[in-house]
Structures are given as C-alpha cells and as structure tokens.
Image (cartoon, rainbow, N blue to C red; front, side, top):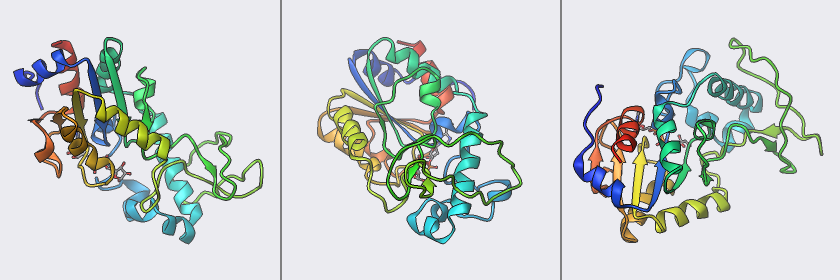
Length: 250
Ligand code: APR
C-alpha cells in the first residue's frame, strides 16, 4: 500500500480535538511483524486454533501447550520493534491529551515511548499464579522454536502453576483497565479506532459508546469491519502509514 494523503475531514477533526482516545487492536502491530490473532498461525502452531488455546478450557486440557504457545508469542514480540504507527502516537501524545487503550497483549506502544492507560486483554509480560493469583516474572529461558509444550514455572509463593497474563475467551476483563478505557472514550472529542476487527466485546462496543457521548469516531483499517458503521470517517490505510501521515499533518 502506498502513502495516501490524509483525508481533510480527518485532519480537521484531529486538529480541533484537545482530548483524543486511540483504541488499538492486533492490526496496530501487524507491520511490526506480529500476525493478527485471526491470521493463520505459522510453523509449529499452524494446526492449533488460537481460540482453543486462549481459553480456560484449553488451559484445563493442556497447560503445557498453552504456556508453550504464550512463551513463543512473547518471544516473537521481544524480537519485534514498534512500527512507525506506534511512534507517531508517542509523538502525538507528547503534544496533547491522548489516551491509548489497547486489546493487544504486546508491549510495543510502551516500547515506542507511549503510556497506555488500559490493556483490556492483559499482557504477555504479566504472568500470575493460576492458584493464588500472585504476579511474578519467571526467569528468562531460551525459547526453542521446535518445542510446543513447556511446563509452566511454579509460583514463588504457593508452588501452583503460573498462567499467562492474557485475558482468555470467557473470562471477565480486568475491571480497572476496562473502566479506564470507558473513561477515556467518554471524555474524548475524537476516538481513533485502529486495527481491530471489532468482533470481540465489550471492547468492540467502545466506538458506539463514543458516538453516544458525542465524540467523533475515525476508523483506520485497510478493510471494512464489523464496527465500520460506527465511524464518522473510515480511512482505508494501515497503522504504520496512516498514523505518521496524520500526526505529520497536524
Ligand atoms: N493496519 C491497520 N489495521 C490492520 C493492519 C494494519 N497494518 N493489518 C491488519 N489490520 C486489521 C485487519 O483488517 C483486522 O480488521 O486489523 C484487524 C485485526 O483483527 P483481529 O485479528 O480480529 O484482531 P483484534 O480485533 O485485535 O482482536 C480482538 O480478539 O483474538 C482476541 O483477545 C484477542 O485482543 C484480541 C481480540
């Protein structure tokens, strides 16, 4: 995709907004080389359905497999870099009040220098004990790409198996993160929705909430999504092309 001019209506909205909320999904990190959740999984993981692995049932069935998958994903993120879209948001955040709420479990916003008010689906880098809930960082071990099952480390407090820090299908969201995302949307004049298919609720309901509280909504996504209808403007571009162009035009 080639650089496209920023639609003038989008520039105007961005110039006049003093509070912006940016809602990001997997597409935000796609140009950093991290496959979106609904893309086919590669290599060792191609025969697994991510929705099966990211679930309490998946964990109950085979916790070594689930831990191995998350460890592999964390390693993929460690080897990746924030893209120009992440960096553009940091530049913008240095100028105005801009809240970032993400569904992504990676840390690429933070590594680009942004502060993130809400990781609604948790983080790859915040495991906790599946029994007593204590958060702890296991020692880093080299990741063998040919190994799928890895025994989860033991909790330093109670000895129970550590579980990934991501929110699984069927689990409640961390309330503090969810409320922070709602607060950001309710107080924004402009909400940018970047790189999400809009199929997972309640996050997918935030653009509608933004509209109902009077914010204008702009979608940045190369394709039509389930929530495109909620947007005042649909900009068919990518995160790493559109966001630097937008911030550069302000
Ligand atoms: N720039 C912007 N958007 C992109 C790009 C890009 N470079 N590449 C892909 N996209 C868009 C796709 O068109 C798609 O609409 O990103 C979206 C990614 O959709 P999903 O893979 O469904 O990711 P997401 O919406 O974040 O998924 C929501 O579901 O799987 C669970 O918990 C997981 O947080 C995740 C949630």
